[in-house]
Image (cartoon, rainbow, N blue to C red):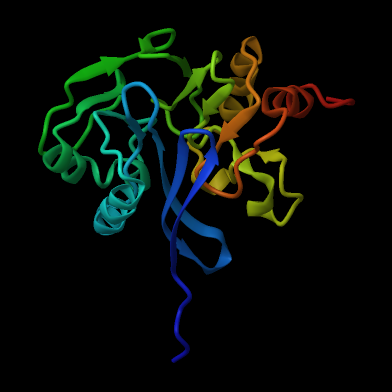
Length: 216
């Protein structure tokens, strides 16, 4: 049987923000977390339960331990390492109001639409999952979009553009598309996604074009 190429890697995707790819399998099956190291070091999502050791190793290489953990939604590739991260780093943990988190450790805080977590504002973007939120730092011109959007290259399209996640991974695809309009109230250059490639230039403008494409 041929060996499977599974890559683990970390990239400083923009100043002070690290894309930690805990598992990158063939055919675009990529599992990530994002670590912001400036100010209060904040980790967004935790990967799978099975990739927690890889996440820890990459954080150690970065050399900055998280003090805050923010979960965008409750899918296993975002929440799976929650207990491991809480136990290892004793972080202040935040999860969406609507999330019934099946975790050993109770979250420290709950958040909802419009709430602020440090420099980030939460925007409720349901459709992929009912509790899904995106977190936006307008001052830093960067947004953690969770699975509200994917990189277009996940579907074999051009790198540097967005695409809505496949219907098979969304609880309500129409709602997921409608939720994108809520992001148009914000401006940011970088849009971080968990599947496919993140968009590192003109991200909010590209979402605007995606939502308001001619002929809609």
